[in-house]
Image (cartoon, protein in one colour):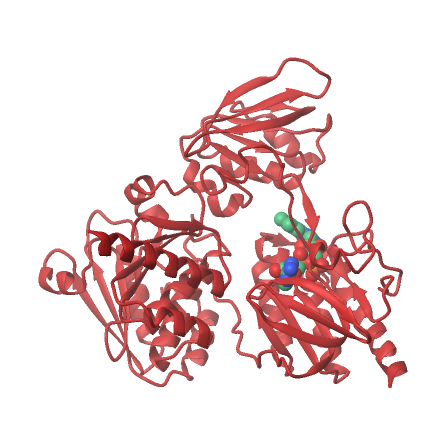
Amino acid sequence: MELDFILSKEEEKPTGKTELIYDLLIIGGGPAGMTAAIYAARKRLATLLVSKDLGGQVLVTAEVENYMGYQYIEGRELVNKFKEQVSRFPIDQEIGEEVEELSQEKDVFSIFTKSGKKFRGRTVIIASGKRSRSLNVSGEERLIGRGVTYCSVCDAPFFEGREVAVIGGGNSAFEAVLDLVKISPKIYLVDIASTWRADTVLVKQIEKEKKVTFFPRHRVKEIKGKERVEGIIIEPLDGGEEKSLSLEGVFIEIGLVPNSEFSRSLVNLNEAGEIVVDCSNHTNIPGLFAAGDVSSVPEKQIIVACGEGAKATLTAYQYLLRLR
Amino acid sequence: MTLLKDEVQNEVRERFKKLTGQVRLVNFTQKIECHYCEETRRLTEEIASLSPKISSRIYNFALDKEVSQQYKIDKIPALVVEGERNYGIRFFGIPGGYEFNSLISAIYDVSRKATDLSLESKDKIGKIDRPIHIQVFVTLTCPYCPSAVTMAHKLALESEHITSDMVESAEFPHLVNKYGVMGVPKVLINEEFGFEGALPESSFVDEVMRAYKSTKEAKDKS
Ligand SMILES: Cc1cc2nc3c(=O)[nH]c(=O)nc-3n(C[C@H](O)[C@H](O)[C@H](O)COP(=O)(O)OP(=O)(O)OC[C@H]3O[C@@H](n4cnc5c(N)ncnc54)[C@H](O)[C@@H]3O)c2cc1C
């Protein structure tokens, strides 16, 4: 591995004011939330950005080749550019805070964070994106950090010389396999579908690897192990016999779920858990807007999330003008 | 050839303009049997050259035994970031990749002798009156790890009883085995207690307090 030194942009910003009723609260600091913040600052809205981190999914994206202006840019580098742009504006920020609840009383929305902070605003943009989906099988949660992982770039090095399973059939699953073939003696690729959804180039490359055994149309029933992962039980979808594979690592790469739980009691979600929006980012609640991956907008891409963030602020601005 | 690219150097130099107090980087190294010793030493010197507020000292782990013992260094490469006093802020293994951020944050906080921890957190850890040793295991490719390392280092700066280490997993496979690390960030408190993942400040502090209380009770009973 090449040794490099990564410097993230500084975050030294005014923090949230509990006494104030903000014009706009933005939940989430990914591409959608950061763009929304810039548009809000340019409209001189009193704005607070509350997020667990700045960067969102782009922080874990190795390379981006479809964001305009850059033929190729590393994800973290793009995050730095975004942060730099946000840092030029005096936007209040609460980074490292997780929103646990969103409520509304008359015309004022309140958000409550896990650490016990409360902030209020006349409008809210939810831009909380998505996170890794879990399998929801027995053993999974208990064995996180003990062989079960959702971040293959972070944790692959711990599985040198160990047999592992990768669960999933999309690009991130195949990319995890690509990392693991260099260090692991045997890799099981288990996916529920019968055809792979990853890019053909990637699939062709992995299919040549002798170390990889494929289990399409299989479901994971259980992850076994006391202190650490010792194996998994999988079963074919069409009712054949279940198999027990003994292995030490389970890399779960089965897609994403929207971070919309905190808004569930207030706003309409679709069956995927996404916040339902119209083409101007309105939800069913006046004054409450959503943008990016957490919303029902069809395409989940950085450039789309940025555009949606911008639109959401402009719509919120129009709404605030009418209130005055 | 420098380890740090020109643009990174410039950025760091710019950021170091905000340093107020003197910072000393104390590096323990050795020529043989160490993966990134050489690079860690060079990094130490390069960083020190980027601000008049930063000085560096390089010690040989084996030959300068007394100093190594004084700093309680048990493995290398090791880098201690100290200011007015030694706060117990240490890096074992090279702070490269994403961990470079943790190093720059530690220098910044030590120089200013202040952290941005909440009053509530400072209050809680102010009660600690016994040694607490926090180890944060990382990989250099983990984007979530610096927040855990920086949190641990801030606690060390605020409490004279807390010592906090970043431990780079690839450099110390025996520790990875000993503690069964299979995912990062992994935080270990006093060897016995720990958790996986990057927690927000309040939960991190609560975990430290829980570990403190358990060791205290065990001690009180015996
Ligand atoms: C591995 C990978 C590779 C990808 N590659 C590309 C690519 O090459 N090109 C491309 O265009 N797109 C790519 N994408 C998709 C792209 O990253 C997303 O579409 C985009 O990041 C969505 O932006 P967002 O702002 O809507 O959400 P996110 O990026 O998910 O950001 C959400 C933010 O909200 C915060 N948050 C979540 N819950 C809470 C809460 N309760 N309280 C406070 N804050 C919260 C999160 O911490 C985060 O900061 C990739 C995604 C992944 C995972």
